[in-house]
Every structure is written in structure tokens, then in C-alpha cells.
Length: 277
Ligand SMILES: NC(=O)c1ccc[n+]([C@@H]2O[C@H](COP(=O)([O-])OP(=O)(O)OC[C@H]3O[C@@H](n4cnc5c(N)ncnc54)[C@H](OP(=O)(O)O)[C@@H]3O)[C@@H](O)[C@H]2O)c1
Image (tube, rainbow, N blue to C red; front, top):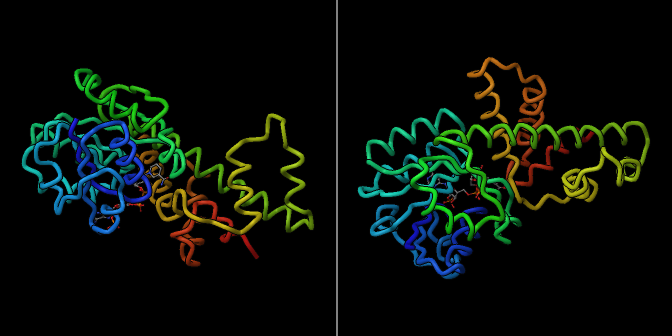
């Protein structure tokens, strides 16, 4: 298939490379052209419209709803649009409307997994959209992920993504608080990891983000500023649903503090700095 990938940031670049590796004809566009040029195996287009011309599918992987909308507005012919960015429920509804105006088939397919799983083609795709689009999408999802879950009609994938992100941002913040408490009580935080090791409280995520916090090294897999966006998307979704997410409110406060301290471009584990004395 000929596939246009709009957005070659942390996630879009490995996704485009894996699609090319799987034998698809990949055209990439990125606002900062140099990043598109670094994508192996793909052709670079000057505009989203140039990238989309003649493509069987257009895949968007940009920061938020506004960036996706800006990129797609200029495209005249759009047969199949696979929207993978995390944009939340309100923006997804807006993009679905844009797809209707363009008579495009819209597949809402946000992903789980950060930079490294994206590079290893091990993402989990939370796909939703019309059943007749599934067969066309499968080889695309198989090239970039280890698992696809078809959730239902377009919009359901985004709702599930918001739910999973609520879990993720709460976990990482609780971990930062736990390490801060251990330090405050004059305990080596490594003792906490030793205590939970191999028991039901242990988790690969706690170990991964915990070692970053102990080493105070935060190369971005999933940046703190994107995680703040996602925590806010969870709060917006909860408001719509009439659910009171108190933990997520605190998460937003801690993320905001760490971003204000200058750590927004570091990994989400840098929420650690919000709690560091
Ligand atoms: N990283 C993760 O672990 C992860 C995991 C799952 C989902 N996601 C989601 O996937 C999406 C992309 O994440 P990422 O980590 O790849 O982010 P990223 O590295 O920051 O890349 C963002 C991309 O969006 C582009 N962009 C931003 N604003 C734009 C605008 N106004 N107009 C045009 N292009 C714009 C950037 O272009 P420039 O290069 O010109 O800045 C870049 O291509 C986000 O929605 C994120 O929440 C991320």
C-alpha cells in the first residue's frame, strides 16, 4: 500500500520506518523537514497534501487535535484516514466531523507504547471504526504493533486510550511520591524496590521509571509535557462523564510543577522533580 505518514516525531518516525520495512510505499511529511528526512526508507513530501496524493491511507501522528486538524485541512482527497495521535474525546469528535466533510473513512486508532516499543514494532493499537476498514488496516497495524484491539465504532479507541493514560499518569506520580517519602524518612529508595520485588506490588513499569528516578536521568520516551496534555484529556473526559477524578487532579498539579521547573521535554518520570526537596 501507499501510506502517507503525517508527523515524524518520537512515534511517527519509527512507525513510518516499520511500515517501509514491511514493504509499503511510505511518504512522510513533518513540519520540521529535517526530521522527515531522517526517516529511513520513506520519501519526503513538502506538504500534507503532497504526501496524501495517491495514498491508500493517511496516518496522522501529531501532538494534539489542533495540529492534526491543521495538517489534514489542506488535503483534498482522503480515502482512508487512520488517526493515531492522542487527542482526547472532544478533538476526536471534531476530527470525525472533518472526515465526514471529506467523505473519508475515519479509523480512530491511538496506540499504547512509547519510543522503544514503536521502534521494535511492538505497539498496542486501540482501533475503532467501520468494520469494512478493518481488512485494509490490519497489515498496517501488524507492521507497527504486536497487538490490535478493535474496540468498536470510531471514538471508542480514544475513550480506551484516555482510560489507560489515566492509569499510567497516576502510576508514575505515585512512584515519584513513594520515592520522595522514602528519602524524607531517611531510607534508601532502593529498599522500596527490594521490598516489592517479585511480589504482587511489583511492576515492570515501576522498575523502569524507578531506575530513571534513582539515576535522575530522563531521556524522553514519552515527554512530561505530552503526559500533562494526556492527564488533562483524562480530566476533560471525566468532566463529560460526571466522574470525579481526584487523583488525576493531583497528577496534573505535580506534572505542571515539574514542567514549570523546566522538565517538560524530559521523560514523564521527571515528575520526580516536582517532589524533590
Ligand atoms: N511518545 C510516546 O510515548 C507516545 C505514546 C503513545 C502516544 N503518543 C502520542 O502520539 C502523539 C505524538 O507523540 P510523539 O511522542 O511522537 O511527539 P513528538 O515527538 O513531540 O512529535 C510531535 C509531532 O507533532 C508535530 N507538531 C506539533 N505541533 C504541530 C503543529 N502545530 N503543526 C504541525 N505539526 C506539529 C511535530 O512537528 P515538529 O517536528 O515540527 O515539531 C512532530 O512531528 C501525541 O499525541 C502523543 O500524545 C505518544
